[in-house]
Image (cartoon, rainbow, N blue to C red; front, side, top):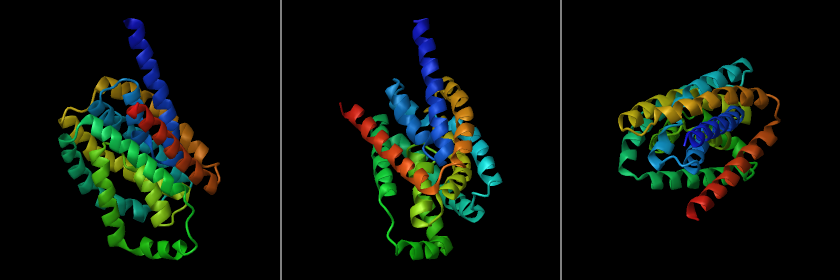
Length: 255
């Protein structure tokens, strides 16, 4: 019995390191990947959805500092994302109590698949002109981030796997800038989601702490690697990781 417990702890830490690296590179995917991984390790649905949240705060702060030093952070967009995302996150977190853990897991996998597929689709040449107009439209950015916040709270994740594609595809930010800007927003948006899910009893702190011990160093490694990756490679890799993982997870859940 003790051997099984130690094996589970080791698996949690290894999973945390791997997910931290992904989060550090892309500025997204921390909680979104962590939820399916924890579920596959045998953690119950609602606990798997919310327990990764405590690890996202230190990981987001550490990664954001590195992106800020390199100049890959849009302060205005980060502020608008927080303004729109905070109320949406709180509402989404409160609504999560009305959905089962199985439903939340399935939604997480489906969203990963849809977002990843869209990231892999090349943008049309006309999109560049539209992104400039959208970038300047404060109301549009705040409204879009409110919608992201709803899903962020509902699925108990930092929202980065939705914010990064939105920043790149809709607003035209580079992959590095989208990642850095997302990390700032994720750090703030995680707080109301974390508090609400904690109050609802969805967080197992033993799992959360062990997982966080792996995520934190992993995110530092990933953020350092991200500064050396070319723009197009980063975007394609992000899309492929999302799609591949989503298909694998949804197949496992179905079978």
